[in-house]
Every structure is written in C-alpha cells, then in structure tokens.
Length: 475
Image (cartoon, rainbow, N blue to C red):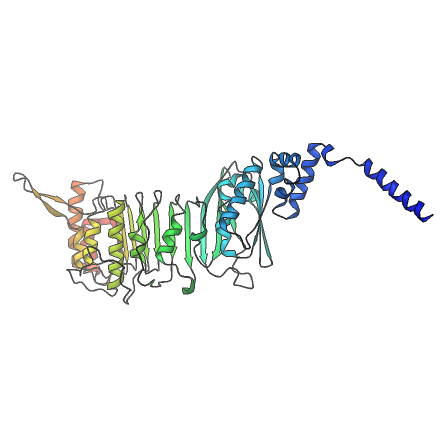
C-alpha cells in the first residue's frame, strides 16, 4: 500500500511538472520582466550571472536596457578600474533608459571618484542611494531638477574633514546633492566631506564650473602638489575658491605639475602659506579676477624648492611686518603673469602684501586692470608713486611722452594702509587724474576709496577732493 501511495505521489508530481512550460517557451517580454525584477535584489552581478545560463538568456539580457537600470556598486576590496569598468558597462547597456545608482561604501573617501563614473551621464541619472556605516542617504535627482530639460553640473564643495564626525548630525554631511539655477537650466551641485583630495583614484574629469575647497583642521591640510593634481581633473572650472588654515607645507621634494585651467576667470586664495607654489604652477589664460585674502604671516616660511629670478632682496628695503609671505605672494603672482599673460581686471589683496619690487613688476604687466583693492598693507610711498604718470622718452621733436602704469584703472581702494603718507597720496593721485582726465578720459579714475589710513588726514582729503571731487570717498 505504501509503495502504491509513493508511486501515486511521484506520478502526480511528474504530471504537474510536465504541465509547467519551460523557460525557453516563455515569451521574451515575460523573461525580461523576470530578469528586471531579479536585478532589483541588490546583488550587483545579477545580470552577468543570468547571462551565463544559456545563449538565449545572454542575447536577451544584453539587448534589454531595462535589466541594467539598477547599478549597484560595492567598493570593498575592489580597484577603481574595476568599479569604473562595471559602471561603464551598465551605463552603456541601460541606454537610452534612465538609471539608478546604489553605492555601498566601506570607505567614504572613494565617494567622489566613484561618482565621477556617473556624472558624464547626469541627464539619465534618476536616483542615488549611498549606504555607509549604517547610514542610508537617498537623493532623487529628478526631483532636484524639477523636470528641467537640461541638467548642468555647477558647483563642487569639498570640505576637508572626517565625514560624519558630528554625532548629532549638525554637520549636514548627509546632504550630498543640492540644486540651483533656473527652471530651464537646472544646475546640480555636490558637497562632499573627505579627509584628502582624491586625485589618485580619479578616473573621469569632474566637469563642474565652480569649486570650493575648505580646510577645517591642520590634520587634513592640503599640500600644493595634491591640490594641483586634483585640479587636473577639473578642466571646466570658471571659479576656484581655496580656503586654507595658514599651514606651512615645508620644502617640496620635487616641482609640482603645471596645471592648465583654460576657462578659469575667478580665483580666490584665502589663509594659505603655499600661495607661491600654487600661483607658480597654474596656467590661467582667461583669468580676470584674483582675490588674495589673509595670506600675510609674520614668521619665516620654509624655503622654496627652487631659486628664481626676482628672489633677491628688495632694493627699496621698505618696512614690512610679513617679509616672507610678501616674497612668496609677489613671486607667485609674477610667475602666474609670466606664464599666462591673463587679461586680469580685478586684483583684490586683503591682508596680502608684496615687496615694492614686486608691485612695480606686477603693475607693469597688467594693462587691463580696472580695479585694485588692498587692505592692511605695509606698502610705502614708493608703491604709491607707481600710480604717478612717468616719462617714456621722446622723439627729439615733441619732447618726452608720458604714460601711466595700469592704464585702464578706474577703481582704487585702500584700507588700513598705515605706512602710506597723506602727502604721497595727494601728490600721486592728483597728478594721475590731471593726466588721464585729459589724455585718456575713458580710462581714468572714477572711484577712489581711502579708509582708515591714519596718515591721510582731513586736510589731505580736502586737498585731494579739489581734483577728484565726488570720485573720492574717505572714511
């Protein structure tokens, strides 16, 4: 009886099995749906595994973009070349459909290099899920762009710090993507916390137009070679802002690479000591605005790795509270102008100074400068005299021909320049406007601000106002 019962069960199972259609007989649409569902399980290799079952499945999977729309990246024990190859394969095979990305990270430092694999296809990137150290950060890029017909990479904000170091979550390190721009051209910006600039693992250019790098602790300060190598992956930059912590990087073992940023028109360097190395190794042929902030230091800096023409002592021997940083700033600007010949229009120096010989050299190389602003400078009357008209020789018949440095200068602002005398300012600026108002009326001083310069008294202001009138602003 038992034998008969077992026979009946086996017979029933055989009959039921024969009633199921084989996978090969299922319509392709159903197979694609099944495979697409399988690819959502979170195992990154599912499409590859299924494609190895048989030729039919392989052909179907390779030709079905929907199966490749979920891209799962695990960085553990994988090289960037392996991750990049996977990203390229999934992006290609999911085309032209949109795709979603899941990043399962064990090392948050790799976030930016991995994301660079997908940024060239930003228009198709719909969702991003980042899983790290028990955190899940989800972003809908389609929501950020508000169905804009075009998505454009705009700003990259890099904060050099330990990611998620604030246990209360007040540091907002979980806000990776943020939007800006108009509804027609929606900009995507990214903010990343990392302890170092990841130039060693970058595989794709970062096509942002604006970059801000901020140091938060001396432990994670950036040396100029690392900064420059990272900038090599940012060829589309138009704005670059670097905020440091006045950390001396020491003597370099070798010269850093020279990096070309052909579109950059605005550069800001703030509170750094490696300004010479940075400025000396950038090629910026379209730079129009240069801002130097809080670069003066009153202590000796490590020697530069190579001696250059201009390193000799300043023949003027003018007083300075920051002689070492004055030298490095002046020599950095010299090398930048010599290499790039940029059409610089704005030079803004806030607690950033140069030697007298550097001011003379730089002013002679800036024919397009329209605005010069300086704060807290130890510049002497010798520097002020550089604004004075000067003779350039004659032809023997008409006598001497006159000229001025910075021939396009229309805005001059001086704040807290305590070594400058009021007499020198009156003499120089009066002589300049007397000449330019008549010789070049379309390129003469239109705004002069003199503020908190103790040696410039009320009587000096009254005397200078006879020539400048309402163009002079004193406080």
